[in-house]
Structures are given as structure tokens and as C-alpha cells.
Amino acid sequence: MAKVKEAVGFIHKVPLFQGLNRRQLERLARSFVNREYAAEQAIVTQNRGGEGFFVIVSGGARAIRQRSDGTQAVVNTFGPTDFFGELALLDDGLRTATVVTTEATRCLVLTRWDFLALLKEDVDMAIVVLQELAKRFRMVLDTL
Image (cartoon, rainbow, N blue to C red; front, side, top):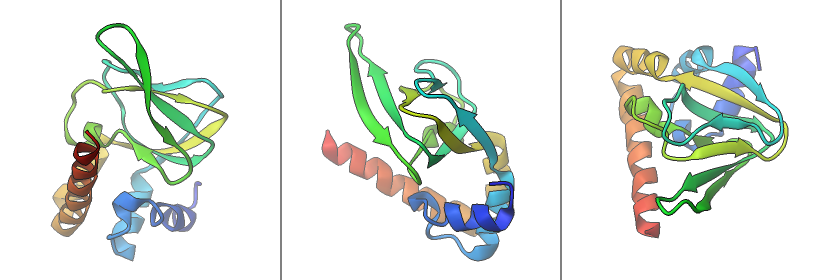
């Protein structure tokens, strides 16, 4: 997804970015990089630092959380336009789950420092994205 126009068309479908205007989407699209992963490859690992935010372009993945008793639970599955790693955009804490591909997978990746630079330049973008993140956190809390 090297072309900005193609990337804009794709990221506009991502729920986190649907409230952004065309100019904001174009600026955001320029900050993403492509990454490809083989089947059964870990993209991020629980309790380790992370590189940023991921949007699945093609393929799929599952999020696995290691419990304190040593057991594991699949806490989410992801397909095209799904995203994960949004907490890594806001702080540099450790990953809350391991995300492993279920097949060959291509992602768009946005680093924290690139995201923060964009938000500093465009307060309106920050408001839209943060409001959507708040909605997502509320949905998660409602499932507990």
C-alpha cells in the first residue's frame, strides 16, 4: 500500500479514523509503514515494549493473554480493517497481550512518535481520535 491515495481509501474504513477529513487521512496515511508477517508469527508480545499501532490490511490474527495462573485465553481476533495496539499510541507501557497471525498477514503500522507528532500539528485530529478511543474503552469495560 505504497500509494497515499490507496492508503487513504483503506484507513478511512478503519473505525478509529472514520471521523477524519480527507486532509487528515492523507497526513495520517503518509505516516504508516507496511509490514508483512508469516502465519503463526508473533506481531507483538505481552509484557514487552511495543512499536506502535497496527491495522490489519489482509490476513488475520488473534490476541492471546497470558493469565497469572499460566493459562492462556484468546481475548480477540482480527481481520482486515481491525486494529490493535492503540494503548501504545498513548503511552510507552508494556503490551497487554500477544498478537499472533493466523495466516500470512499484512499490516499498516503507525509508531507512537509519528502519531504524537501528527496530533500536535492538528488538534482537531487529536479530538476525533481520542473520542473514538474513549468509545472503544467504554465498550470493553461494558463486556467485563
